Image (cartoon, rainbow, N blue to C red):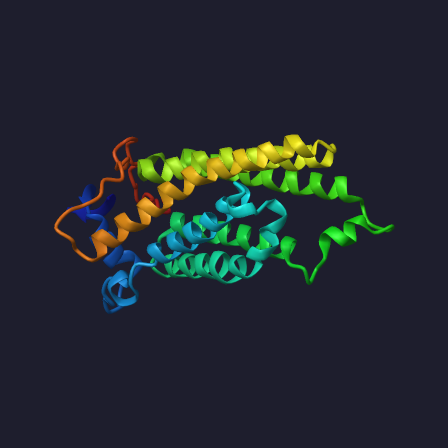
Length: 265
């Protein structure tokens, strides 16, 4: 960090540049007068594994249902309502809140937005709200319109996952892989609901299984990243590679705003 300092010497204005490290800049200008409180991670713990396992656990169960394990089918997703509320939503929300406390903006946004997905999915499938029944009622929009709306809902999530995949190019290969395959998962499931809306049930069934297969790749990445995090936290004498991409693109240099110009200028 650099800023210009003006001083007067024998009637002449002299400018000089003073360089500061990011730590010095923070102490001088962001936390001046405050006592250091230590690393938030040491005080609160690393919340990333909580967010990851909440996502991986919920997605694994949904994957098995979508792929039809042991006679299940997409209609049985209603049985995952409690898990979606208390693991998918609350677990990822807690992870996002504690990432916020630690000042980790990107993980906070990722965890909280996907917590929103699990919360909204829980409400859609919650029998107490009977959304499907309401859609099929005489005053409702109709079941095809209901399925089309869910398909559009999933398309927006595919767009978000694509954004995270691009933005994650400075994180690691595993995270990018999760987002790329989530894009495929949401897109395939959206197509399945559009097929249901068009009355092509057999085609929709194939697409639901394909979406479950894409989700299987997602959960494989997610479980791996979760275990890699715990291996590091528990200080094993080895590390699981995640494909660091922090040097893939050059970091934008932080430049301190220039000093205020003198009134004469």
